[in-house]
Image (cartoon, rainbow, N blue to C red; front, side, top):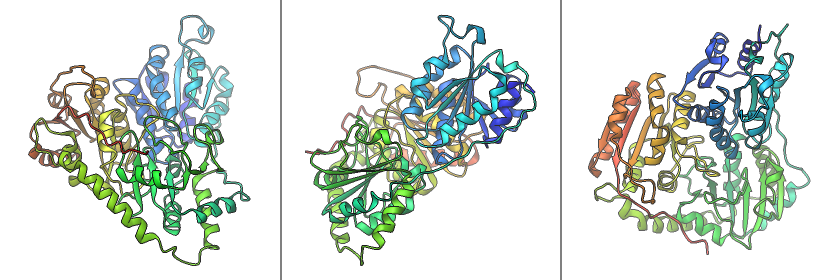
Length: 535
């Protein structure tokens, strides 16, 4: 057995089902991955492949860590953006890029993954010793799975792939969780019980911990409203009367209102990272910060109280402490939910003209409104690309079940959504999977719609075509419905508001028949976003 075959066997032993990427990499070129039982999927470009792995890692709550592989040199250069995106969004995957021959690794100007990937990966190693295959791959999966999920990189020099390995046996990595300091929990519960207007803010860590039920239990016990980060969207059902929706560059009015009026903000499974695509934490609030990564505490937001640990273990500890200290309802549920409903109704009334607009070109908010009317959110996984597609969708599309929205917000790589959608459909083929793209995004990764066609992954891509990039005066052109058809899928161009819903229904029917669909909707150059004032 050589190193190439040993890596493939190790991947299978780790439970990997897919190897995404682009040749030339011996794992693809020799059939080693397929011989080991993995399904290999080659994309039009490396970035999309890594995004597919990213989606599966997140939707499985970090349980299914998928592998990505690519060519040395150009392949690794093309891939670094996708690995950086996964790092920023805390998405687990294992990347196995080829490297130049071992003797040439450090020869300028050859691209060195060991050097260049270190700042965008949780762990980064070069496999130089053929006898270290097992321990090296195991360390990578352990890093990706344990603690804060993030990508792990193992660069394999080209010549090392062919080195012999004797008596190879592989023991898969293990996973573990840790909970908060039990002595700190009662003090946090004191703060939550004493608060007059507490707000719970849930992040992606709730998804990774599968802490959806204890989050709901805590909210209902405290009778406190719940908002989420964009990465945490769907961690709390947005049709629940205590839901405030998700914070982002564009967000619901009720979230800003309750953050402004809160006396205590309890962040669970979130980083409170200062980003243009997250909430602004108002000053003068008591902050309780619970996170898995201790380096997040006091990073951007000063915490008055901190709990470090798995979100589910933390929430269960808090709920357990509450059970012994609450005699019954707190008698503020009706008042809190009525206030949420009133503020939400006022906010939606302001946006109703755009959501139901009859103008042509079609207002993009009308498109979002029709999507919410047509699809069943419990049976749909949806994501939106960087920029306006994200900002139009996030406040108005309500999720009802966990892991039905793939959100992201630390960085804004155009074209991310298409790979996420393909990966999501592979992970959960029973769901309708939708990605919404703008002109910039489809120009960068749109040809990987052909990957969905070739690999029989029937996603629905919605292209909001306003012939420019966001609000920048940069003209674009193209008939992308024709491109979707030419690539082997179903393509349709929509120019009338009345035709949006029927076109969605036709496209969904095509996906149910097994054909990827691309709807090109000609939209207005909308620039107004929902940015409620926190002051």
